[in-house]
Amino acid sequence: MMSAFSSLVSQPSEQILCFYTNCTNKIQIVKFDNTQNLNFERIVFPGQRLLFKALPDSQLEIHTNPTKSSTENLALIEVIPCDHLRVHEEMNA
Image 1 (cartoon, rainbow, N blue to C red):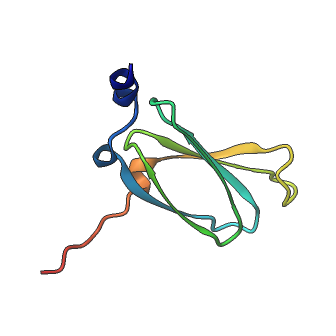
Image 2 (spheres, rainbow, N blue to C red):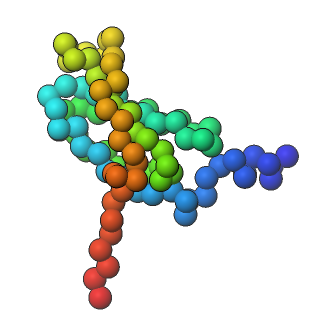
């Protein structure tokens, strides 16, 4: 049974490091659902930066309240492929 569960969980090598910045003046809720039953949801304050790991085919959803700075009555304002948020490391020789 444990081997069946471990096949559902993403291996670290399959995940990519991603970076997102809330460039607005509103509080945002960012989240994504993986196909492997992994959920991610965070509050991101104005100007805050966020590093996270995700599968390359995941999509980050950005939710906010367009009229207030609270997190009530959230609306989906943007969907970004996590592959577009990927951190590319430079190798110095």
